Length: 253
Image (cartoon, rainbow, N blue to C red; front, side, top):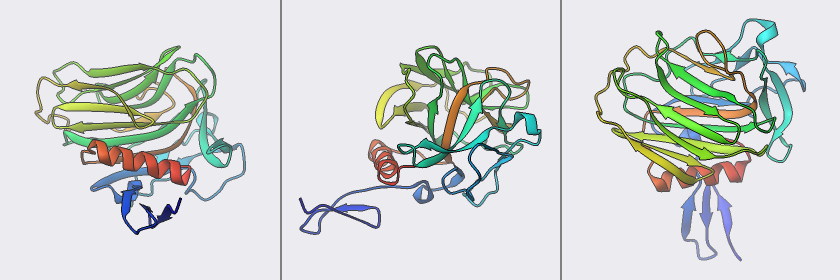
């Protein structure tokens, strides 16, 4: 009783700030912020040639081939009240031609996503070097989601895998602090991985693809993505929770 939400702060009747809700715009060193909800609204089921970046860096995810363009769906998220970008698991994918993850071993990646078919196997998102070495990838098996990352080119990727096989929307949060990666699913820590080295060697990272692998496309996934953000900062557990509450309050990333 007497709880208010004002300016992204949850306030008690006595005026005490209980906690804050954080949006991607509030994260330091924001590099990328894609949001279907913030895009100029398109017709339902229309083709998407560009997924708009609202970070100010113009890192838009694009697809110039009409047959490979995903669809703009007005009712994918937020209890069928928020838009999403829908991929068909056949040939749809969006790509970045700009390197979005390089020269850093500290970052926070967020993605609001969902499967559209139970048990589907494929790739939500794949960030790699020009030679195809993965920097960060999020893929599904029939009953799980796996997040893999790499800091040093010559080392193997660290990964966290957890059970998930439903058609609900979920907020994935991956934060890397020098040598350790933490993976959260709907605000719950699902696992962590400590890398052997914290040396930064990812100076040649290429772009990214969504809905499939980058490079020669495969691993297409029947899924929808509402939003993606990437910031070059570490999010501690309190900030992770504030970001998750912000999503719950808004209904979108």
